[in-house]
Image 1 (cartoon, rainbow, N blue to C red):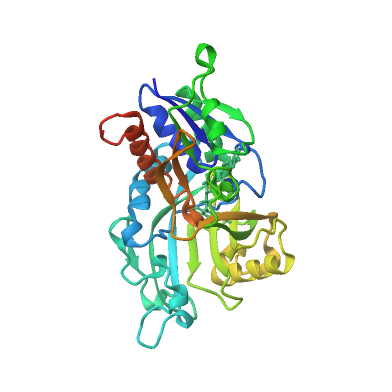
Image 2 (cartoon, rainbow, N blue to C red):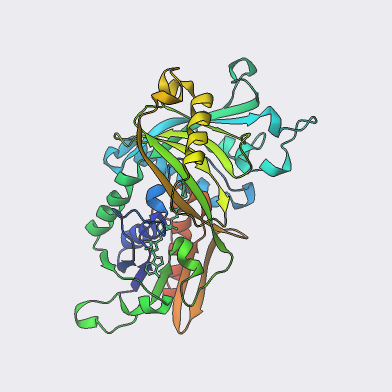
Length: 368
Ligand code: FAD
């Protein structure tokens, strides 16, 4: 029976553990310094909104394309998972479009492309008629998406894993190969793992044996409020408050409040919310989505908390590949920046393929 240790209990590690455990014959153990229930600056997943706004280029769209059907299924068929269906509204500001009608290079983000690849993937995609655009907007689109209440979804993933026999252990490792002796139990307690899945997120830049200098934080500050967003999740191509500030609103399922954001500050490790940034976040959110306070302005926002999470941004993109480190096969899955949830099933599916290669299984059909 292949003995597999997953290092990391964020959305990446837990989704890998779930798909690996669904495959009969795998013994799966999750080892992590932080687990669902913890709120720590080194642990990104609880801080995410999280919703589905496709961010990868068409070339790298596999992760999001493969994840969307499962996230939609969870939102429509599994209410206890903590997802619900919402309408995404993507708006291009006039200030971000050139006179020739192209996106300015600074915001050439795949999400805001004209005629994006995801128009064929996301349900109910439509261009917003000019007459329905908010002031200052050049154009935009809407489509059916989901919002994930991470405070419900992460524990739900733990529960799904536990039901399939996955074991959980708390430990802070200094080297990735330490994980190899943490999987076997009982009589086999001295056996080495056949594979370690490295889902260490941002901390891949500090983990011995990996030390990936291409991984840096992209700091995201948010405000969580009790106000409802009316089923709509607006986001804009930019704002007047600087290149590292962004605008988005999303209401979480099951009473999780509404997350308004935010920032995208590369290389910034600051864990404390900046009060000035918080004021700007709230002003922008109410401006783009006055429904938040019923037209009563920013003072009518009812704040639950301020928060900061660090997205695991990797220069060159996500790392999903296998590597032999000190005699241990490691399958890496880290560096998902701001799309770790919306790409989680696609990435985990690739991890399962790579694990199969290592343990010598033949290619099989995906079992999401
Ligand atoms: P993490 O959640 O950080 O988990 C890493 C795990 O590895 C932890 O359990 C940690 O303890 C463990 N670990 C690391 N090193 C060690 C070690 N040495 N020993 C033991 N354990 C270790 N994504 C979306 O898809 N949609 C969104 O709308 C969205 N919005 C976001 C908004 C904000 C403000 C932020 C901050 C992020 C957002 N994201 C969103 C991105 C998403 O949150 C991340 O891509 C995702 O959470 C990364 O998950 P992960 O499992 O790779 O890393």
